[in-house]
Image (cartoon, rainbow, N blue to C red; front, side):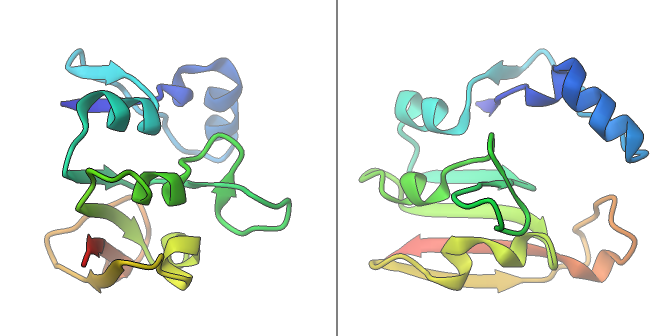
Length: 134
């Protein structure tokens, strides 16, 4: 099942994105409105595939984080989760805390594939980030 917090449907975020010249997400009818932790706790997946996830900010000075982002450390602490895959972009997602300091019991890898496409100017910066429980 596909889930999202639907944060981009709020007027505040539509204005912010609009001022940046970016469009907000158009959610399909098959995307259920659930935040990441709610969805993980309800569905109890062994694998999570996430796209362009912004980590939750834990300090005011953390780059590429957001107060309404995903608590990825909490996701990796879920006992049923075995693999966490994030589609992302260098420069934005390289700053993730769980990438810089891989939690104990997890292995991290990343790959660049020519089939990944995003709205960044340099498509070569797109990445697949993978955390696997050992």
